[in-house]
Length: 328
Image 1: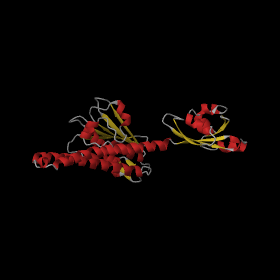
Image 2: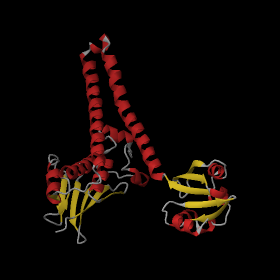
Image 3: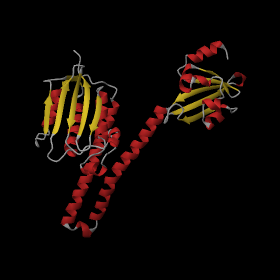
Protein backbone atom coordinates (compact mmCIF):
# COMPACT_ATOMS: atom_id res chain seq x y z
CA UNK A 1 0.00 0.00 0.00
CA UNK A 2 1.39 3.41 -0.98
CA UNK A 3 1.98 6.25 1.48
CA UNK A 4 -0.50 8.40 -0.46
CA UNK A 5 -3.17 5.71 -0.18
CA UNK A 6 -2.60 5.40 3.56
CA UNK A 7 -2.90 9.17 4.00
CA UNK A 8 -6.18 9.21 2.11
CA UNK A 9 -7.63 6.40 4.24
CA UNK A 10 -6.53 8.13 7.44
CA UNK A 11 -8.89 11.00 6.62
CA UNK A 12 -11.89 8.71 6.29
CA UNK A 13 -14.30 8.83 9.21
CA UNK A 14 -15.38 5.31 8.23
CA UNK A 15 -13.27 2.57 9.87
CA UNK A 16 -11.16 0.99 7.10
CA UNK A 17 -8.49 -1.74 6.99
CA UNK A 18 -6.24 -3.45 4.46
CA UNK A 19 -5.92 -7.22 4.93
CA UNK A 20 -3.14 -9.21 3.23
CA UNK A 21 -2.94 -12.99 3.52
CA UNK A 22 -5.34 -12.89 6.46
CA UNK A 23 -3.32 -10.27 8.34
CA UNK A 24 -4.25 -6.66 9.02
CA UNK A 25 -1.43 -4.59 7.49
CA UNK A 26 -3.17 -1.21 7.81
CA UNK A 27 -6.01 0.29 9.86
CA UNK A 28 -6.98 3.95 9.81
CA UNK A 29 -7.61 6.03 12.92
CA UNK A 30 -11.35 5.27 12.93
CA UNK A 31 -10.67 1.51 12.74
CA UNK A 32 -8.03 1.62 15.47
CA UNK A 33 -10.41 3.60 17.67
CA UNK A 34 -13.13 1.01 17.12
CA UNK A 35 -11.12 -2.21 17.35
CA UNK A 36 -7.93 -1.13 19.15
CA UNK A 37 -4.50 -0.12 17.91
CA UNK A 38 -3.18 -3.64 18.51
CA UNK A 39 -5.00 -5.02 15.44
CA UNK A 40 -2.25 -3.87 13.05
CA UNK A 41 -0.11 -6.91 12.31
CA UNK A 42 -2.66 -9.30 13.81
CA UNK A 43 -4.67 -12.03 12.16
CA UNK A 44 -7.98 -10.53 10.99
CA UNK A 45 -9.82 -13.33 12.81
CA UNK A 46 -8.69 -11.77 16.09
CA UNK A 47 -9.65 -8.25 15.03
CA UNK A 48 -13.16 -9.26 13.92
CA UNK A 49 -14.42 -12.26 15.83
CA UNK A 50 -17.37 -13.11 13.60
CA UNK A 51 -17.24 -16.31 11.47
CA UNK A 52 -19.50 -14.90 8.74
CA UNK A 53 -17.49 -11.72 8.37
CA UNK A 54 -14.18 -13.61 8.36
CA UNK A 55 -15.42 -16.01 5.70
CA UNK A 56 -16.44 -13.03 3.58
CA UNK A 57 -13.12 -11.18 4.02
CA UNK A 58 -11.05 -14.25 3.12
CA UNK A 59 -13.28 -15.26 0.19
CA UNK A 60 -12.38 -14.72 -3.45
CA UNK A 61 -15.45 -12.62 -4.19
CA UNK A 62 -15.91 -10.08 -1.37
CA UNK A 63 -19.29 -8.65 -0.39
CA UNK A 64 -21.10 -7.40 2.70
CA UNK A 65 -21.81 -9.19 5.98
CA UNK A 66 -23.77 -7.94 9.00
CA UNK A 67 -22.01 -8.25 12.35
CA UNK A 68 -23.79 -7.73 15.71
CA UNK A 69 -22.02 -6.33 18.77
CA UNK A 70 -18.79 -5.28 17.04
CA UNK A 71 -18.38 -2.16 19.19
CA UNK A 72 -20.80 -2.59 22.11
CA UNK A 73 -23.61 -4.98 22.95
CA UNK A 74 -26.62 -4.29 20.77
CA UNK A 75 -24.63 -2.51 18.05
CA UNK A 76 -25.01 -3.59 14.41
CA UNK A 77 -22.29 -3.18 11.77
CA UNK A 78 -21.92 -3.95 8.07
CA UNK A 79 -18.51 -5.33 7.05
CA UNK A 80 -17.84 -4.49 3.39
CA UNK A 81 -14.93 -6.36 1.82
CA UNK A 82 -13.55 -5.75 -1.68
CA UNK A 83 -10.56 -7.36 -3.41
CA UNK A 84 -8.04 -4.79 -4.65
CA UNK A 85 -4.83 -4.91 -6.65
CA UNK A 86 -2.45 -7.65 -5.56
CA UNK A 87 -5.17 -9.67 -3.88
CA UNK A 88 -5.35 -7.48 -0.76
CA UNK A 89 -8.73 -6.99 0.91
CA UNK A 90 -10.04 -3.48 1.44
CA UNK A 91 -12.43 -3.72 4.41
CA UNK A 92 -14.78 -0.93 5.50
CA UNK A 93 -17.01 -1.01 8.59
CA UNK A 94 -20.37 0.83 8.60
CA UNK A 95 -22.32 1.44 11.79
CA UNK A 96 -25.97 0.47 11.17
CA UNK A 97 -26.99 0.53 14.84
CA UNK A 98 -29.27 3.56 14.54
CA UNK A 99 -31.09 2.23 11.48
CA UNK A 100 -31.51 -1.16 13.14
CA UNK A 101 -32.79 0.49 16.32
CA UNK A 102 -35.29 2.59 14.37
CA UNK A 103 -36.47 -0.49 12.46
CA UNK A 104 -36.94 -2.43 15.71
CA UNK A 105 -38.75 0.50 17.32
CA UNK A 106 -41.03 0.82 14.29
CA UNK A 107 -41.83 -2.90 14.32
CA UNK A 108 -42.48 -2.85 18.08
CA UNK A 109 -44.65 0.25 17.73
CA UNK A 110 -46.81 -1.30 14.99
CA UNK A 111 -47.13 -4.54 16.96
CA UNK A 112 -48.06 -2.75 20.19
CA UNK A 113 -50.50 -0.37 18.49
CA UNK A 114 -52.16 -3.30 16.73
CA UNK A 115 -52.48 -5.17 20.01
CA UNK A 116 -53.90 -2.15 21.83
CA UNK A 117 -56.52 -1.62 19.11
CA UNK A 118 -57.33 -5.29 18.65
CA UNK A 119 -58.44 -5.82 22.27
CA UNK A 120 -61.26 -3.21 22.39
CA UNK A 121 -62.22 -3.99 18.80
CA UNK A 122 -62.68 -7.67 19.65
CA UNK A 123 -64.83 -6.69 22.64
CA UNK A 124 -67.01 -4.43 20.50
CA UNK A 125 -67.50 -7.07 17.82
CA UNK A 126 -68.34 -9.71 20.41
CA UNK A 127 -70.99 -7.58 22.10
CA UNK A 128 -72.49 -6.46 18.79
CA UNK A 129 -72.81 -10.06 17.65
CA UNK A 130 -74.50 -10.91 20.95
CA UNK A 131 -76.94 -8.01 20.58
CA UNK A 132 -77.85 -9.25 17.12
CA UNK A 133 -79.28 -12.33 18.83
CA UNK A 134 -83.01 -11.62 19.43
CA UNK A 135 -82.90 -13.15 22.90
CA UNK A 136 -80.10 -10.89 24.18
CA UNK A 137 -80.96 -7.84 22.10
CA UNK A 138 -84.59 -7.96 23.11
CA UNK A 139 -83.85 -7.62 26.82
CA UNK A 140 -83.59 -3.91 27.62
CA UNK A 141 -81.37 -4.27 30.70
CA UNK A 142 -78.93 -6.55 28.88
CA UNK A 143 -78.96 -4.34 25.82
CA UNK A 144 -78.19 -1.20 27.81
CA UNK A 145 -75.40 -2.90 29.71
CA UNK A 146 -73.81 -4.18 26.50
CA UNK A 147 -74.20 -0.81 24.75
CA UNK A 148 -72.44 0.91 27.66
CA UNK A 149 -69.53 -1.54 27.31
CA UNK A 150 -69.39 -0.90 23.55
CA UNK A 151 -69.39 2.85 24.19
CA UNK A 152 -66.57 2.51 26.74
CA UNK A 153 -64.41 0.44 24.39
CA UNK A 154 -65.09 2.75 21.44
CA UNK A 155 -64.02 5.75 23.54
CA UNK A 156 -60.89 3.85 24.54
CA UNK A 157 -60.07 3.31 20.85
CA UNK A 158 -60.81 6.96 20.12
CA UNK A 159 -58.41 8.08 22.88
CA UNK A 160 -55.71 5.75 21.56
CA UNK A 161 -56.07 7.00 17.98
CA UNK A 162 -56.01 10.60 19.26
CA UNK A 163 -52.79 9.98 21.21
CA UNK A 164 -51.20 8.20 18.23
CA UNK A 165 -51.98 11.17 15.99
CA UNK A 166 -50.69 13.58 18.63
CA UNK A 167 -47.43 11.64 18.98
CA UNK A 168 -47.04 11.56 15.20
CA UNK A 169 -47.47 15.34 14.94
CA UNK A 170 -44.99 15.97 17.75
CA UNK A 171 -42.35 13.71 16.18
CA UNK A 172 -42.85 15.40 12.79
CA UNK A 173 -41.70 18.79 14.15
CA UNK A 174 -39.46 17.68 17.00
CA UNK A 175 -36.41 19.33 15.40
CA UNK A 176 -38.13 22.72 15.21
CA UNK A 177 -37.62 24.77 18.36
CA UNK A 178 -40.82 26.75 19.15
CA UNK A 179 -40.37 30.47 18.56
CA UNK A 180 -43.31 31.96 20.47
CA UNK A 181 -42.85 33.53 23.89
CA UNK A 182 -45.15 32.50 26.72
CA UNK A 183 -45.40 32.92 30.46
CA UNK A 184 -45.08 29.44 31.93
CA UNK A 185 -46.52 30.51 35.30
CA UNK A 186 -49.67 31.79 33.59
CA UNK A 187 -50.02 28.58 31.54
CA UNK A 188 -49.63 26.45 34.68
CA UNK A 189 -52.26 28.43 36.59
CA UNK A 190 -54.65 28.32 33.63
CA UNK A 191 -54.23 24.55 33.21
CA UNK A 192 -54.60 23.86 36.93
CA UNK A 193 -57.82 25.87 36.81
CA UNK A 194 -59.27 23.17 34.54
CA UNK A 195 -58.96 20.75 37.48
CA UNK A 196 -60.24 23.13 40.13
CA UNK A 197 -63.60 21.41 40.56
CA UNK A 198 -62.17 18.97 43.07
CA UNK A 199 -59.93 21.55 44.72
CA UNK A 200 -57.18 18.96 45.16
CA UNK A 201 -54.57 20.60 42.88
CA UNK A 202 -52.45 23.29 44.53
CA UNK A 203 -49.84 25.60 43.01
CA UNK A 204 -46.80 27.16 44.66
CA UNK A 205 -44.21 29.32 42.90
CA UNK A 206 -41.13 31.37 43.71
CA UNK A 207 -41.75 33.79 40.81
CA UNK A 208 -44.63 35.82 39.37
CA UNK A 209 -43.70 34.96 35.78
CA UNK A 210 -41.23 32.85 33.82
CA UNK A 211 -40.95 33.49 30.09
CA UNK A 212 -39.95 30.63 27.82
CA UNK A 213 -40.00 29.98 24.09
CA UNK A 214 -42.69 27.40 23.64
CA UNK A 215 -45.75 26.00 21.97
CA UNK A 216 -48.61 26.95 24.31
CA UNK A 217 -50.86 24.06 23.28
CA UNK A 218 -48.10 21.49 23.73
CA UNK A 219 -46.98 22.82 27.11
CA UNK A 220 -50.61 22.77 28.28
CA UNK A 221 -50.89 19.18 27.00
CA UNK A 222 -47.84 18.19 29.07
CA UNK A 223 -49.31 19.77 32.20
CA UNK A 224 -52.74 18.15 31.66
CA UNK A 225 -51.18 14.71 31.18
CA UNK A 226 -49.03 14.97 34.31
CA UNK A 227 -51.73 16.47 36.53
CA UNK A 228 -54.26 13.92 35.28
CA UNK A 229 -51.80 11.09 36.05
CA UNK A 230 -51.17 12.48 39.53
CA UNK A 231 -54.92 12.61 40.23
CA UNK A 232 -55.54 9.12 38.85
CA UNK A 233 -52.69 7.37 40.64
CA UNK A 234 -52.46 9.52 43.76
CA UNK A 235 -54.17 8.59 46.99
CA UNK A 236 -57.93 9.03 47.29
CA UNK A 237 -58.60 12.49 48.63
CA UNK A 238 -54.88 13.35 48.43
CA UNK A 239 -53.47 16.64 47.17
CA UNK A 240 -51.61 17.13 43.90
CA UNK A 241 -48.89 19.74 44.36
CA UNK A 242 -47.64 21.75 41.37
CA UNK A 243 -44.42 23.64 42.10
CA UNK A 244 -42.80 26.26 39.86
CA UNK A 245 -39.25 27.32 40.59
CA UNK A 246 -37.20 29.81 38.60
CA UNK A 247 -33.45 29.21 38.97
CA UNK A 248 -30.45 31.53 38.75
CA UNK A 249 -29.00 29.34 35.99
CA UNK A 250 -31.66 30.34 33.44
CA UNK A 251 -33.99 27.38 33.84
CA UNK A 252 -37.50 27.00 35.22
CA UNK A 253 -38.59 23.84 37.01
CA UNK A 254 -42.16 22.58 37.10
CA UNK A 255 -42.78 19.60 39.41
CA UNK A 256 -46.08 17.73 39.80
CA UNK A 257 -46.23 15.56 42.93
CA UNK A 258 -48.86 13.17 44.23
CA UNK A 259 -49.36 11.29 47.50
CA UNK A 260 -49.99 7.90 45.93
CA UNK A 261 -48.48 4.46 46.42
CA UNK A 262 -45.42 5.28 44.36
CA UNK A 263 -43.74 3.28 41.60
CA UNK A 264 -41.30 0.39 42.00
CA UNK A 265 -37.71 1.34 41.00
CA UNK A 266 -37.51 -1.22 38.18
CA UNK A 267 -40.33 0.51 36.31
CA UNK A 268 -38.97 4.08 36.40
CA UNK A 269 -36.48 3.86 33.48
CA UNK A 270 -39.19 2.53 31.14
CA UNK A 271 -42.14 4.77 31.98
CA UNK A 272 -41.69 6.98 28.90
CA UNK A 273 -41.61 4.02 26.50
CA UNK A 274 -44.63 3.80 24.25
CA UNK A 275 -47.35 1.53 25.65
CA UNK A 276 -45.33 0.70 28.77
CA UNK A 277 -47.43 0.50 31.92
CA UNK A 278 -46.17 -0.10 35.44
CA UNK A 279 -49.63 -1.41 36.41
CA UNK A 280 -51.43 -2.62 33.29
CA UNK A 281 -54.84 -3.38 34.80
CA UNK A 282 -55.01 -0.15 36.79
CA UNK A 283 -53.88 1.98 33.87
CA UNK A 284 -56.47 0.56 31.50
CA UNK A 285 -59.21 0.81 34.11
CA UNK A 286 -58.32 4.49 34.51
CA UNK A 287 -58.54 5.00 30.76
CA UNK A 288 -54.82 5.24 30.04
CA UNK A 289 -53.50 4.55 26.54
CA UNK A 290 -49.87 3.95 27.55
CA UNK A 291 -48.73 6.91 25.40
CA UNK A 292 -49.15 9.88 27.75
CA UNK A 293 -45.64 9.97 29.21
CA UNK A 294 -44.08 9.27 25.81
CA UNK A 295 -45.92 12.33 24.48
CA UNK A 296 -44.71 14.38 27.46
CA UNK A 297 -41.10 13.32 26.89
CA UNK A 298 -41.18 14.20 23.18
CA UNK A 299 -42.74 17.62 23.81
CA UNK A 300 -40.21 18.49 26.52
CA UNK A 301 -37.34 17.39 24.25
CA UNK A 302 -38.73 19.55 21.43
CA UNK A 303 -38.54 22.50 23.85
CA UNK A 304 -34.90 21.54 24.59
CA UNK A 305 -35.82 20.69 28.15
CA UNK A 306 -35.38 17.74 30.49
CA UNK A 307 -38.01 15.41 31.89
CA UNK A 308 -37.64 13.15 34.91
CA UNK A 309 -39.77 10.97 37.17
CA UNK A 310 -38.82 10.16 40.74
CA UNK A 311 -40.79 7.98 43.10
CA UNK A 312 -40.59 6.13 46.37
CA UNK A 313 -43.04 3.39 47.19
CA UNK A 314 -45.45 4.53 49.83
CA UNK A 315 -44.38 8.16 49.48
CA UNK A 316 -45.77 9.26 46.11
CA UNK A 317 -44.37 10.23 42.73
CA UNK A 318 -42.97 13.46 41.29
CA UNK A 319 -42.81 14.22 37.56
CA UNK A 320 -40.62 17.22 36.78
CA UNK A 321 -39.66 19.19 33.70
CA UNK A 322 -36.85 21.70 33.33
CA UNK A 323 -37.25 24.25 30.53
CA UNK A 324 -34.79 26.95 29.43
CA UNK A 325 -36.02 30.48 30.07
CA UNK A 326 -36.02 32.99 27.24
CA UNK A 327 -32.92 35.13 27.12
CA UNK A 328 -33.43 38.87 26.79
